[in-house]
Image 1 (cartoon, rainbow, N blue to C red):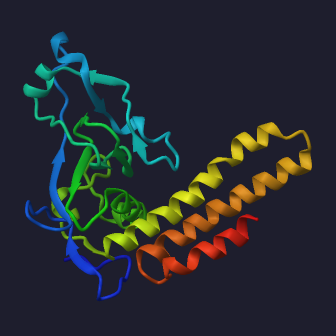
Image 2 (cartoon, helix red, strand yellow):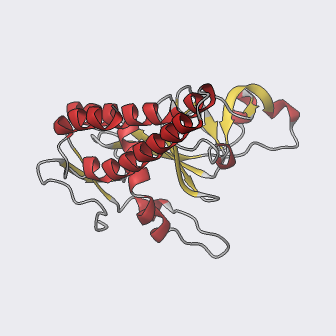
Image 3 (tube, rainbow, N blue to C red):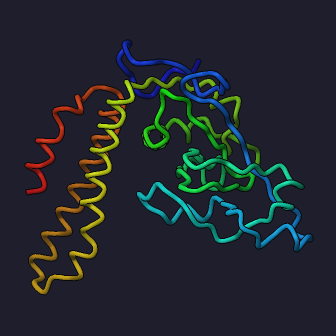
Amino acid sequence: MAEPLLKCPRAWLHGTLEPDPKGKLIRRVDTGSTPSTTREDYWDGDIPWLTPKEITGLGEGIFVSRTERTISKAGLSNSSARLLPAGTVMLTKRAPVGAVVVNAVPMSTNQGFLCFQCGPALRPLYFAHWLRANKPYLDKVANGSTYPELYRRDLFEFEIAVPDIEVQDRIIAVLSAVQLVALMGLPLEQSVANPDRMLAIQNQTRRLNEIRGKLLPLLLSGQLDVTRVTASLAQVVQ
């Protein structure tokens, strides 16, 4: 088991990223595939097919429901691609390393992903935030002769510790609320006529992004009690 980047309370549920079909944390891990590009009948079907380059422009966005290309049922059946259920956590293992999304609809991916299906003790969105918080660790363990790549055997040694589902939900709610307010900054900037007001909105957006970046590892490691955060955030955004 690899030394965890985030030190978590002993009372939390501890485990690794190695899949266990009957486990509480990670039930299954898949990668994707590319159907033969010489077969037209394998493409332009009704199955979304995701590539790493599509998610690099999402910024802080975490859900994905559409893809640039789709494959057919024949393409799915005649390749190693899998139809992954909604709520699968998709981690890019190369080009780039460590980008994370959660699919909102069933979809497949190419071979540039490791796709995690969570067990009953781990919310997919919480796990996606956890992977983002551990991006420095992912970069460190990525290796390859041509370009950096994450390998399953290295990831499976990662230690993860999570609080109860109810606490995970509260942490997700706090992070989502901060992100929502920050994302509202851009349309607000374009709707004001006063330059000073526009600058004030930009400054507030930067502050919110900084706050979110600092909150993420603190909440996911249990160093900050999520029940004490809401009131403080309300004061910041006023």
